[in-house]
Amino acid sequence: MSGSDTGAWAIDVRGLTKRYGKHTVVDDVALQVRPGRICGFLGPNGSGKTTTIRMLCGLLTANAGEGRCLGLDINTQAAAIKRQVGYMTQKFGLYDDLTIRQNLDFVARLFELPRRHEAVDRSLQRLGLVERQKQLAGSLSGGWKQRLALAACLIHEPRLLLLDEPTAGVDPKARRDFWDEIHRLAAQGITVLVSTHYMDEAERCHELVYIAYGHVLARGTANQIIAGAGLTVWSVQGENVAARLEPLKAAPGVLSVAAFGNAVHVAGQDEALLAQAIRGLDGGAELRWTRAQPNLEDVFISLIGRAQDNYGFSA
Image (tube, rainbow, N blue to C red):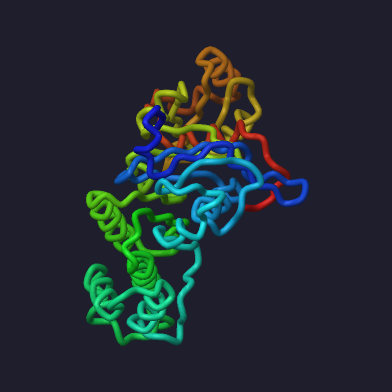
């Protein structure tokens, strides 16, 4: 996710910083994404994901930083960027008391689209909303509201989609359908930056950026991030295993202790220290230990465990 041909980037920003009073919620963030790529933006609540997205699309002004979004300067051409970006917020932002078609027509008017009725028709067709176009938005399920929100994002034919936890609260089938659509859009050359808490969704992204407390901690493909973490992971099973492993959380060399179904993963970077911590566990012989391959969730839990909190300020 780096290179010298910066003209080829859909997003190319560096030094992005946002402060609210004494709190720095985004601190010196650099981000580069090529056209037609899906970049997963991951991190715990309050890590600065939403703030970063809003700076990229011109809704917030950075206190520091520079760069370009779709070739436009983020500091001086924010209005032009907004017209070429589709931004889907965490919460449903359309009108419950308007129909699907009326909501899309309203968005088309905001963008002053020529032949807006045709634009609405295309948007309805693209997201499979034609048969429901007269239904009130407030009566839709979470998955159909998600489709409507994406249709609204796409109605002006943006070159970049910024999606802020777009699948929160929707069922697994709706999530899968949504991601199939995202990949179709990327194949058409649209760039996507999407924040998510779901590891299965992270694995569907071309590349990932992990941010915690305003700082980028890891970036690259899923395989690159896992390899770069250098984790040793043990999978542990046994009766009441989670409670019995509680002392390991404070042991030297242990970065994370996290439940995965009927097992618990114990991870660390120093293999010798990790082995020493395991040997020192009372009753360890009654537990079944096997070496495991680290996964993205192991890596991200370990990263957040090492990150420095920014006083719990939410962003």
